[in-house]
Length: 447
Ligand code: TRP
Image (cartoon, rainbow, N blue to C red; front, side, top):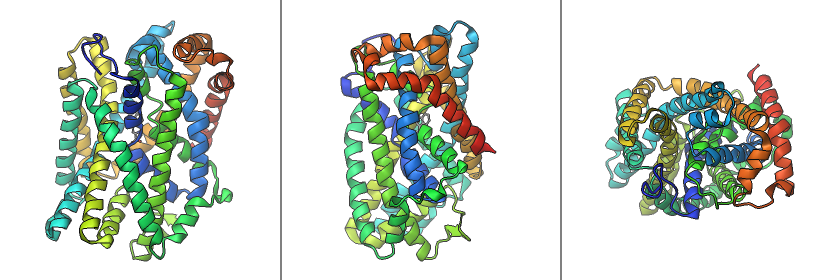
């Protein structure tokens, strides 16, 4: 975002927005949360329902968020207040800001693990195996707190400068590298004896495993992974130029995000099955019992099994890239409360970023010492909170702002969108299908 081009800033190039939104989307959600959810919910069946959720629910909500953001040029709270007839509507934005803060608080702890495991791999490569084991102890509250704090400092320092060139540039390099290393590792794992059971579980959907609980989990995962439901893309859309084609950009963001998740599953699910044969207990009596640090337990042993320079290189680059992917996501999460404070309370950017970052870090420190909180906060604010936000965003757009106005906004950059098949279906989806399907699955999954 160039601070000079407008007082609030805007993206530098056409690719800038797509890069930043893809950077926000691709993160721990794809490589940590998705494979864990898929492994605990029947593998291929989860993947299948997840894909449907991304394209039929996620994509329409994404268009809704970006168009609201670009029309108002505001943070989520200000945006709903500006378009709504009553101040009450800003509550949707406040719910989003709250969910964002809570998600960021545990996300920072997991992101801290990506850092500590980067060091673990470096120490291991240098032959300091004791140090490697020491630094990667996810049960140590102090280590968790230390790495969360470092991660938060990085996030704050980038946000202080504006959601700048930094993201655009970092994402341009990181994304292709991340895809490349995933593909290489997938090839390696596929050749290991014992991985085929995992591959089959993941790629052959057993539709008898589709339960209300699975659909609920897949829907929450789609919202989390695409960064939807709390106004992150309202905020990013508010920096977007009127010339840009929103429906097209949203397709690219969705496809890229889904691709990274799919590849991560292709690597990690077989690796989970391998680890299980090597004595790490992941399933007990058919139930999934692994904790939130599962991927950090299994991936290093995979890298070490490659051995040599190649194994070290793979391990270090993988965790370093994952840290960067997590950073472009924490940036988007912190930007929500920060843009809100700048717009609505006239606080300078650097002050807002520092104090809000510190405040959220306090919650992260608490989580560092009680990592079982990760699952609980994730359930309330991501699994339930984001789809709930999605319902409110769709209903607000359809019945308060009105789809005609949204089409006016979307057609700037995408002429005649309302007459296209995607445009016509989108109207149907935001007005009826998305709110109804999300609500139905929330209720069924919850009970
Ligand atoms: N999508 C990110 C991931 O997959 C996490 C994330 C970033 C997010 N910003 C968000 C989730 C906003 C929900 C809302 O890791």
